[in-house]
Length: 386
Image (tube, rainbow, N blue to C red; front, side, top):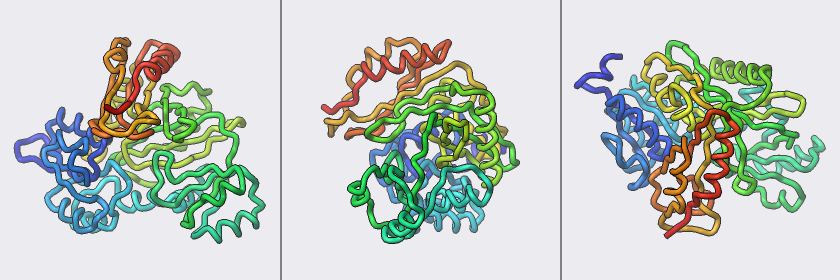
């Protein structure tokens, strides 16, 4: 462990140089850890802040293999990476966390769902298929009623790769590819718990948050912490997240998104083996942030306290619908007059409709006070273009 804190450094490789990596680098700079980042974009948010930045594809086998040769520990800030290269680097003796086999499992939503079933973890009713023809046959065989949810098996994120099918016309828009169908059940709350596990098997979970989604873009618009649900629901959700982490034996962070039905049932929606949008508010709201916790977990350090310091609301800053081009944050100065407002801009130079460009965390004595501030942020701060 002490080798990380000496002049003879160990090197941490990060696949992906987006905003999640940028927030990881806030911690590595504070700890004076040596970092190397791989991303295809020359002006990725991590192009400044890391000790080394390599422009290249994290999907390309040879690029990832070459990138990892001088790294001691390799991690990710995005799931869409070349897992075969990570497996081969692991076979060479590199520490790769989260483990490549887990990333590969979670990359495929059908395999992910089957893992829940095989391990008696609660999830919504579903079935998978290899192509559109098989999907249609299974819909007819199972007498699936409209509306339902279609999800692409691979490649979907931030609302992409998801279609709510409300009519036969909507079915025409479904691409011919592997995927799954889920029942569109009555959902009362959408919550998330970020959990961490280190190599020693120590597990910590952050307080549950409740998420509110944008009705058009289908991505998270607000995150509220703590989630104001009955204690029995929160205890059950925490146990489900811990159980999933233990079944996977993941090293690093796992964000577990869950549905709560009107009957109080809790279903796992999906999970992400990395730092996650639902945990951004931990930077200001918790003793240890999710970013520091991930690094503690993958480097074998003791996990930090996840205790909530103050109630908080996170507001995602996304590009306004009618603006594309060089970014302009209109109203940022006015927004900063709000007490307890913390602005995080991701360093993306170009905006487009609904692109994640930053977030603001609001803390207060009560969740209701933080919520009121969050609503003001949406009115004041707009992501436009010059």
